[in-house]
Image (cartoon, rainbow, N blue to C red; front, side, top):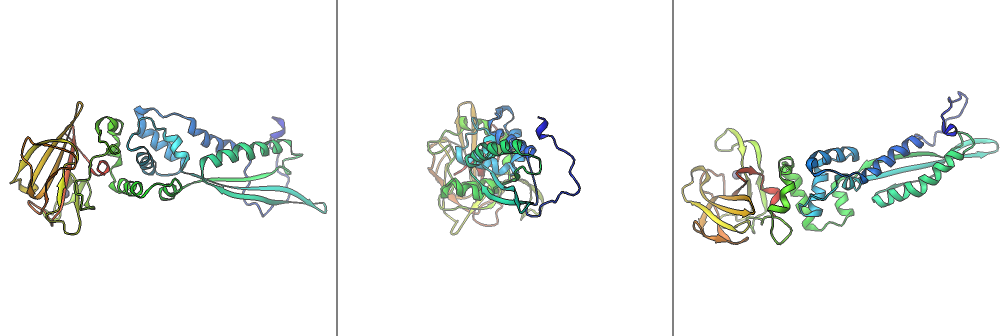
Length: 339
Ligand SMILES: [Zn+2]
């Protein structure tokens, strides 16, 4: 490898102004390692860690990376390789300069530049262009006559990636909701199990509980200042409202059995709980602040069955549905799981 060894730079050598940054073999090795990340395999045991590491390498946020996969694969992350997904977030910018001589005067001239987005284009460029040019670097008469490279990787925005991958409107809306839920970390603790416990026919999600209302007015959170009680405390569910919310139908988010109907639920107001058994796992959805109830305890309901109507009962600042969801007794954020 003596030919590629760096020699001390001569003081009288002209440094070309045209090419601001010069990156040669070391950078290519770095780039190739990044690309080769796609061949690394994540273990499901530590999927969350793998997502964070892969996102870190690609320069995107891990939330973007997880949402990208959840929407693409319908929540089924058990066979997904985060490193492979992270490659989709990479943009590559390159400049190539060549040493040119005119009238005995040598200088650097930029001969090509461009931006590559699709991972197959990046791999192709590295394989064809970089491979052959590394050869010419090795064969160059001196380090000063080698082709010069500037290569930079920078991440795409999730929005741009979704356009590039032609996500449909529903997928984009779904991704927005996931990004805005702000509780992906918590969801992630259960994500390995999702294929087993959400078994609905259409895409593996629970149904949206209010077919006519789509505005999320308050998200699930660990602590929030309660508007009426004036104290900071957890918001255990998601609030959904919209125009003409009062009396709007509320549906069961999945097949289940009505566990309780409480017409005098204190601050919860009129509320219904529905139990959804999935194998060994028990999900319970709870619908609060209702105006009316259409079911009774023990009744079997199907996904999408109207069980009541939106109201303002209990402690509530206006007509809305407060939906809570528990998984084996643990409160979880319903928002990423309803569709
Ligand atoms: Zn609420």
